[in-house]
Image (cartoon, rainbow, N blue to C red; front, side, top):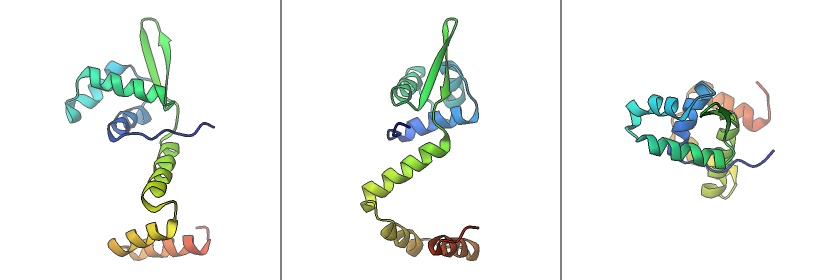
Length: 124
């Protein structure tokens, strides 16, 4: 399967709408995003076009309108974003990432135990 291109913060907001419900028209996505973003319709259409070009969204023609659907799952995009972050910030090394977050975040007992099991290679 083709590698997933990096998704901007604004594109993530658009994709969240599609991951909740697909297919949708650009107008429906605009209506869903308008209250929280105050973006113009042209902004939403531009973001949708970028996501189609990246292969994250796909479309089909339905009469005079385009119906857009997520071509990649949220999980696939989260995995790609996580890998991109790891490569860009920590040079692909997991240990500095874990040390950074573990030393700056208060882990619950349950989270600490899960992390320990993960590091030991246990499955739970």
